[in-house]
Length: 116
Length: 111
View (cartoon, rainbow over the protein chains, first blue to last red):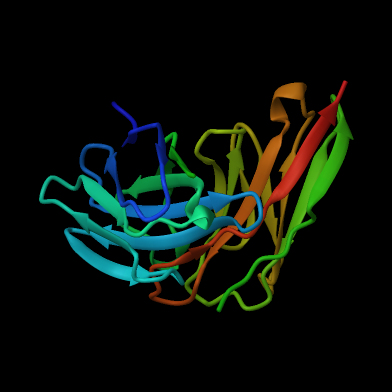
């Protein structure tokens, strides 16, 4: 079956702009979680959506937001971009979500954002 | 909050067994321990998951002592293609929906 699809794969923005990234999970998966990966901070949890509801949010400012649609596809939005937002943004889908860390996460290839 | 500590990097020769240990002193009762592998510019890929004792699959083994405060990923007979970053992952606590990845262990396999 098809894997997790993230679009766009690469994008360049300038400071102050906003960006929307999309994630299509594996069919049947209700959980989508988002992560930011940078060389300095590693992989950091942004938030998780399960059946259209945000279940938890990591330690990121309110400029980072997301949503999930009824077909489980998810989008994340970053407003007022800063240079430090340059990163690889990864989404992962899973059948039952993140509680206790049980179950396998299936990651997409990521969206690489460069902020100039 | 659960937090993991792993070595930053490890080197190994081809054909050797590699053991990567992760400490997670604050692991909660309901938390599972999961390991992922990541190649550059790709998303992480699931390797193995366990709750206690030993788990083995076709690519790795996971050893978890009784107190569950650490775990060891064992990769038998590594090859050059095993060069990657390995992440140890635990939940953030019972009933929580957040995961801590940490910075991972960069494994370099030398010919």
